[in-house]
Image (cartoon, rainbow over the protein chains, first blue to last red):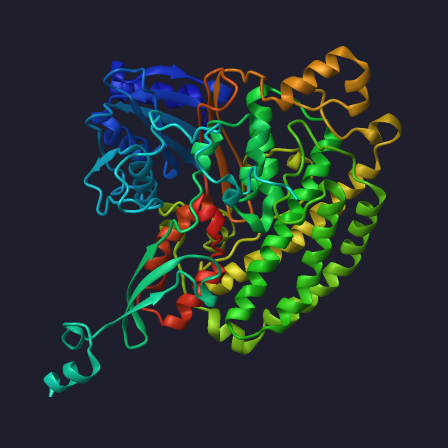
Amino acid sequence: MMALNNEIVKQKLVEKFGEQLTNWEEPYNFLTFVAPKDLNLKVLQFLYDDETLKFRFLTDLCAVHYPDRKGEEVAVVYHLHNLENNIRVRFKVYTDAEKTEVYTATALYEAANWMERETYDFFGVNFIGHPNLKRILNVDEMDYFPLRKQYPLEDQTRVDKDDEMFGRGGSIL
Amino acid sequence: MSDILHHNIKLPKGAIEKETTTLNLGPTHPATHGVMQNIIELDGERIVSAEQTIGYIHRAFEKLAERRPLFQITTLTDRLNYCSAPLNNMGWHLTCEKLLGIQTPKRVDYLRVIIMELSRITDHLICNSIVGVDSGAFTGFLYVMQYRELVYEIYEEICGARLTTNMGRIGGFERNFNDTAWKKLDKFLVEFPKAWKEFGNLFLRNRIFMDRLIGTGAISAERALNYGFTGPNLRAAGVDYDVRVHTPYSSYQDFNFTIPVGTTGDNYDRFLVRDQEVWQSISIIQQAYQKVQEFKGAEAEVYHADAPEYYLPEKELVYTRMESLIWHFKIVMGETEIPKGEVYNSIEGANGELGFYLISDGGRTPYRLHFRRPCFIYYQAYSELTKGGMLSDAIMTMSSLNLIAGELDA
């Protein structure tokens, strides 16, 4: 059997989904593409089920915030791995920051549970169908999504805070 | 009758009717080894369900990283899995080098392999000896602990720090290993295998220990994969996935070693896999040591790649040469622009696949950095692993999974 490579994976996906998958790239030999957000589960399922592809390991799921992309500010990124042939694939779905709705992958991968909770916690992505979508690392009372770009880190030049309490400034001796 | 009880003892409402007990295990309990909370529902001593609460030491590393030049992020990685900080450091440097396209010399690769395997040993050593401690056998812990101290002394010789090491630089090491470091490594290679053998003798075929661990906290290979297990915990379930072999980095392809695998995925197999991995690591260190010794002349002095944009020049040159002065300032002030790109790089951390997903938009700091933290991913399975078992087994499961709060919470 011929070894699985990026070409074959791409070909298989194009055969199945055609023009719907876009932005094909291979940065550092890592096959990457963009899928419409409504198709994320179909793509995941196809990659999982197909007898040649067998991408059955969810390596990572996270999000990236692009405030300049109007209407599709938040990208949810999936990293999948075929452990048998040792080949990886990455795909992204873009969603509106105001109304982030992406189908959950928890039915396919138990691992997605906390990864999605983390993504919700930091980016506010609403994973539809998630069994327990609540904050995981931040406090429940938090009312914003801290990894979005509109929340800057603390101003390093601020002076209204007693820096001695935080190990900065103050007297050294 | 029940009215009287309620009146005198003040049980929570409905406590008698529900017939199970709710137990808060943690966040600060000696048996949780870190700040993690488990709300356990008990029927007698059997666990009905366990719900984890995490995030007690969340420090927003991913956000912080968005304002730091690459070399300042190394200190953040220290604080992920702090039982094997140099592994995280090397993983991060390798990620940066992949993005920047820096080729490291062979000698640097081998030095890194030595450091990475030493930290794998310290990590497994802690995990396995803590499994011993939690099962009531304190002795083994004391036998091997002094060798972690020795490894920390080696770290000190190399980078000056012990726990949060900030070791190495993009492109290599900040300085060559000195004689004391090599001498201590010699000592380690002679003495530690004896202690590890002794440690094994105490536990591996110990009837009490085996009865305590076999069959508890088990997971099948299929479930483990579905839960995103990697590292020793996945291998204990029988899947021979190891990043060092699947996607060799830092010249791991030059070494001879085997991947130990278990069959049942229970606490005992996890213990065995880690035990065997330590032997493999010792062998890798010996091979790397030999390879490093083989470099002669100028090659034997190489400890970093030629990457002037990211690797600090010698202080002497900063005072005498203009270019070095410029590079020095550009690096220290974090004014080097990172090339645009998107990279995922992973290494075999002590707990599993430690991944770095780095996106650069061409600025001075990463646009986005995400850590794939193996602990965080496999801790989800804890509820399934402990369900139906005894409370005391849940404690063993927690320690044999090797949960490190720093990595869990980022």
